Length: 98
Image 1 (cartoon, rainbow, N blue to C red):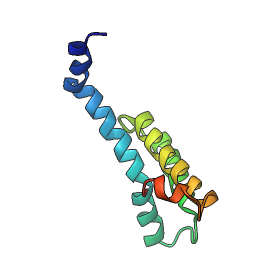
Image 2 (cartoon, rainbow, N blue to C red):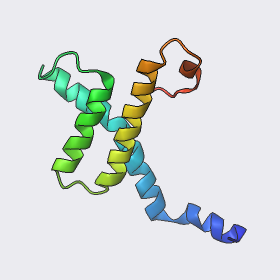
Image 3 (cartoon, rainbow, N blue to C red):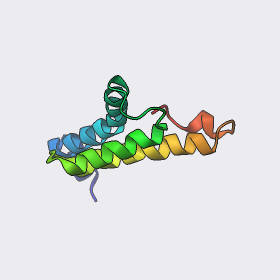
Image 4 (spheres, rainbow, N blue to C red):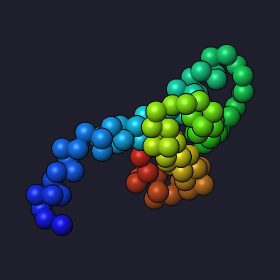
């Protein structure tokens, strides 16, 4: 692939829209957590649980870019799960805050 064609991907607005949807999905579990804790529906749900709930909610409703947002919420589950099972290890230095 030519270098020019490679840089054309940066000008593709659809690619940026999908990237933003993944980012929104990564943040969605925090929104779900705020909503659930505000109405005291499920006490003491682990951080990964909010990501799973976000994935289910995105599947239930007709949300544009739902699959990209589910990928972001899934990444949140993986990050929080990795933190839970690698607590106190070198992974804490490398895993981003979710």
